[in-house]
Length: 73
Picture 1 (cartoon, rainbow, N blue to C red):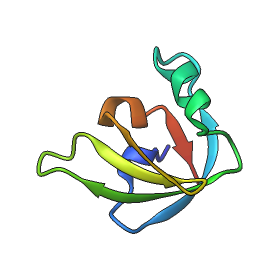
Picture 2: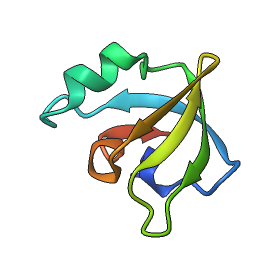
Picture 3: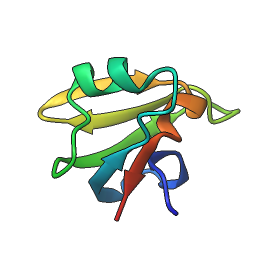
C-alpha cells in the first residue's frame, strides 16, 4: 500500500486512510490529515527526513516514519 512518505516532490494524492495503530496517528489527524483530503509533497531535506506537505492551504512538516501511517490512493 502506498503512503504519503512515498510521494515525490510536487506529486499530489488523495488520503484514503490513516493507520490508527501508529503512535502518531492521533496527532496526524489533529493536523488535518483526514481521509478525502488532497495533499502535495512540497519538499524534503537531503536525507528525506523531515518532509513537508501542503494541506488545506498550510505547509506541515512530518517525520518520514510518521508520514508512513498516511495511506494514499
